[in-house]
Image (spheres, rainbow, N blue to C red):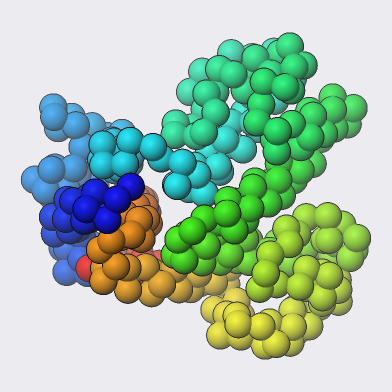
Length: 323
């Protein structure tokens, strides 16, 4: 795109940013007495479909579709956003493998918005024709399916594809010309590696098993992290102090949920400066990340209302907002 085309697209995004939920709006939702009242408040802000009859999940999915439709309208070619789409592809690989393995109908199991049509993925496994898939997906798809056929271990199948998904996200980030997208991919993979290490440590996994699960990235030395995780939690914290993630120690000591909030907030802080880069794709990527953060926050609030959780308990799980 030319500078003028980016300027127009960013101007449209600036207008859309005005309707993003800020901290005050989230507090209003938290103050609502019921999930139904929350949904009504969201509908008054234009959330959901035209009929305003959506349930919670339908409303959130409709908002996600609106975001991608806007980006497609502005960019035409969404290849620059591949890093955000790849996890859907690998989710669909898992779903297709298990549908073929169990000989079940794959209804309502595929995620929208990947880079590969779910029907093509399903056909690849049914016909054992992995050439139908993009080259980077072929080897992990074959390995995961053959592993499931030989062992019946669905968890091990997921394990193979989760690592492949992280590697794909990292490669897509490295290939991007945009600094924000590169940072997003780096932190996504690093955060996943840290969570894998913490969980593996808690379950006593040996170092070789941990190494097989970790995805290499620039800011994490996976061999050192795996060796630390094979010992104890304190060794993980000791290793992290030697990295740019030293301040992750406190939230990790609290819980994995607190660590995930720390990761999301770190991404949001990286996103905000993109408001001042009007002639690049950065503000559009920032808006997409902000919208995903917003949808996640609304889902937490709606779930809290549905399950009658204390307001403060839900508030503590919320992330920083973009606006």
